[in-house]
Length: 362
Ligand SMILES: Cc1cc2nc3c(=O)[nH]c(=O)nc-3n(C[C@H](O)[C@H](O)[C@H](O)COP(=O)(O)OP(=O)(O)OC[C@H]3O[C@@H](n4cnc5c(N)ncnc54)[C@H](O)[C@@H]3O)c2cc1C
Ligand code: SF4
Ligand code: SF4
Ligand code: SF4
Image (tube, rainbow, N blue to C red):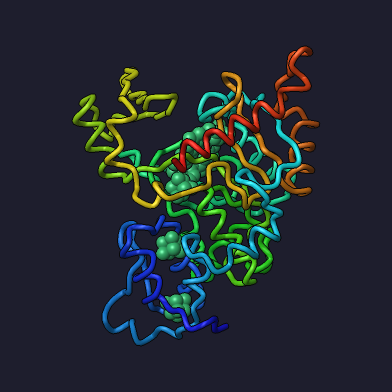
């Protein structure tokens, strides 16, 4: 598929060199999955593998068009996803929390994301999920997982880039291994995968779906996390070390509630003024106008939710059916809106989220 004369060199010029790459891994995933052997991620930057691989480029332009940071497909994407305002299409809004004691312990907010994945695995509605685990230094590791037992390793939020589309580049390399371990899967292209990611990553997945290109063909449900900003891993760890003297290896959990909180393995709770982390914010986040993830089936975050709950924005029929199912089996419980607030609750929450977006884009 060749599209309008764009190549990876245009992506370098218009996105990467300007600090606008959000390291989603989409460009590399597409190109590598085709076996073109042209580009790779060096750390968090997509680049030609070497001077020699420049000539392998087919000049197909797909890497440019699937990139969440390029504009050509956006109007079409907005039309398909019925995006008419900054929040995007929303069918329903609720606050909910998990009823699973283990997920409650390790989940970031209401534990909704992990509980949805648990339900999807148990009911054989997915074969795999793309999540973000982390290493001993609290550095995110994007991963394709195949069962619910692996969920506790990904629960919780790491506030730095996890290139969640990248694991899909090796889909065919790992196909034999996957097929031999997963008895239910007979054809790698028929796998059903839940994708969890930031709004920019969900945008890239949906651009791939719009162009009908791999690897998005196996993504069967897209769940977006709310995302106000994201941090450069090294800068974040350096700042945390200099402000509260914490080593990356001692971090158990982090949370943002007005300020940045670090919970350590030796049971300390440390607070860092969020403004002190400004320098560590990734450049592309400054120009990002998403917050809740318009291009998803369901968006989940804590902003606006009662303590211990998550806000859940349902955007599509698929998302509505899934949330109904997870509620009906009692895996998550819905926040009961006080009787005197029923009529104003929904508009109030949506207004709050709109305010967050305007604060973000100021
Ligand atoms: C960079 C970032 C910024 C965020 N900013 C906000 C915010 O400003 N306001 C707000 O309300 N919510 C924000 N969130 C979302 C919030 O932190 C929770 O992820 C969300 O509320 C879901 O909570 P949960 O308890 O349902 O999820 P859990 O059940 O705890 O599951 C969390 C999921 O997040 C995934 N994950 C963890 N770290 C990353 C990462 N770095 N990149 C991609 N996926 C990851 C894991 O794979 C896991 O599937 C942010 C998330 C990220 C990753
Ligand atoms: S082959 Fe296509 S996808 Fe790969 S780098 Fe070249 S233009 Fe991009
Ligand atoms: S597709 Fe993703 S990784 Fe590639 S240049 Fe665009 S933002 Fe960066
Ligand atoms: S703020 Fe925007 S660009 Fe930055 S990680 Fe979040 S969704 Fe992506």
